[in-house]
Image 1 (cartoon, rainbow over the protein chains, first blue to last red):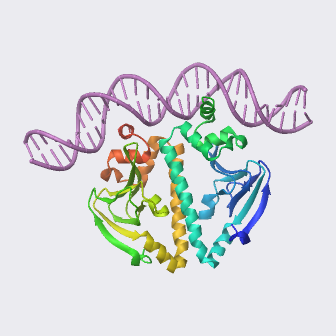
Image 2: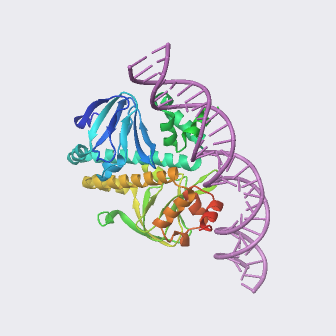
Image 3: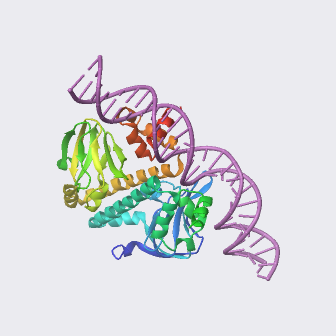
Length: 169
Length: 169
DNA sequence: CTGATTTTTTGACATTCGTCAAAAGTAAAG
DNA sequence: CTTTACTTTTGACGAATGTCAAAAAATCAG
């Protein structure tokens, strides 16, 4: 964090604020200091949450960042949030000037990859309830801040199913 | 490929050969010149295919490579295959000597990430049949070389379901 | 507070896919 | 060939989750 301090900007967002709107290129990566952000997109008219980020978590419009295209994703603050913004272009030139940090950047990218592998395996082997329990385990307070619908779409189930899961304990 | 030629070794494997056995650390990354490899693991006693790699594709025991732990994954040749092996330790020191290549390595890692995002979305939104059609679309000849069971576990469905999907066109 | 809006819950029913068991088909070994 | 092992198909049934509709509960604005 300190190493990258020079290219990090502090920003505050209000609950509900749209930090990045889909269909535009997004050059920033966001690191959450406090609050909650989510990235989401629309699939057949439905709002699908792709990712949640809480304290020390990162979010970005991955497709746009990595391929420099317009993004399918939007990013939104679900609570009032303190966020560090890193411009991806600045990051690239910062890394170019400090090649020793490239290794770190790669390691981060690889860790994110392994996280995704885990999420994919969850989809392959776990029931809706088990996936929900895992999520609660990882983010115990998530239900206090995030609506049922957002959680359900993240887990790949309907709101109704999640409601039933929750009330059958 | 040429850039890394110095640390790539050509190897041949016979159909059915186990290239890497699970529960051991795997220091190699494999790039397929011809043939097919798969990585797989056991989940509740069932053989689950995690990944297929055909021409120019890569496989590795990702968990072991990236975290230097014993791997859950095994790697197997499904056909006689010509493979390039890259030792991960050599790769790391090669990159350390040629920091300008770190950027490339990071880009590769990021592309693999986006591939996984796509696969995850498949699990979230596509029916078993749609996932099968996507796979066929990407690897039209896969059915000629890979057994039904391996394909089914890769898609996250049972062999029986895949058999029905296939015979209902 | 109070009415309006949004979110969550509940119900009835449909669909997809899994499970278990057995039959049919294919490949491998003697 | 022919026997044996493995792979794929088929059938009957059940479980998990989706869909649509409406009721209940919570939240928000005035």
